[in-house]
Length: 366
Image 1 (cartoon, rainbow, N blue to C red):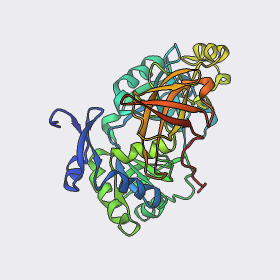
Image 2: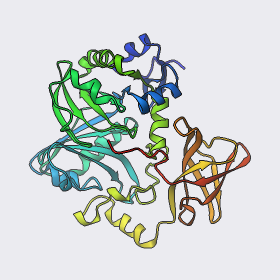
Image 3: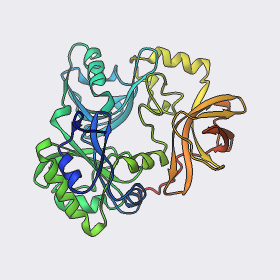
């Protein structure tokens, strides 16, 4: 398809020059792969990979009541983190459906920075801005930032020579403001791969210089530019949800295995009453990870049969790390325990599978 009508990140020309195969994703032209999905996947697991995630959206919330106002919009509790720390959370509709899953960065009680999914940029900003109330204002900063994700066990070795900010003190889900390749950046120890790594927020005009500096610094470490293909297989091995596939407005955090980011005891928030009612009544289905034991690969939308009913596959692929087909899907709660037998309709053929203990790939602590 033509990419003339879709948005382009500041690194579009750099991707093309490197031979990236560009496709449309969430209204943006992005590389699906360079060398190949499996090679890039293994680079991230064994060495390091560099992703352009500039399509993601950013929202800034400021004001004297910013903490309390934003806390009423999200399910997690901003009082649980300190300045310089980030928080994973959901944002729900009054009926408990998931508007989006987000990462919120706390600069202070009066200043927060939020990363939202690309497909939800406009919707999320309207939801946040329309529900803050007095004492806090939201500003859409999506066009003010490019974002790079450097992921893998050698990420810190690659990034440290390019910044005076000490990386070791930045723990998981913490961040610091600093410079990378002499450009201003928010340096965040977060990611979507299950590996150690950093997400860097920089000005769009600085993106190509920082991208090139990272690739150069990463040469001795085997750093690979990576595309959307391996990003999907990496996150699925960790059972990380993808908005639009595994979660959306028709699903709620409790059934999606995200109950740990729902803090009922913090006070009122959008969706609290509905989620309490769902929890009290009993959650009828669960998002389960599964391994396909028969011949075939489960794909999004395939039907699942189990002992107590039916369900649907939300994500599926072949795991490059484990060399087996894996996936996620909603199944009756009674059939969501590890080891439970499932049958998946793969193009008209019933293929055996079983619920897995997730995450599929067990990572050793850094």
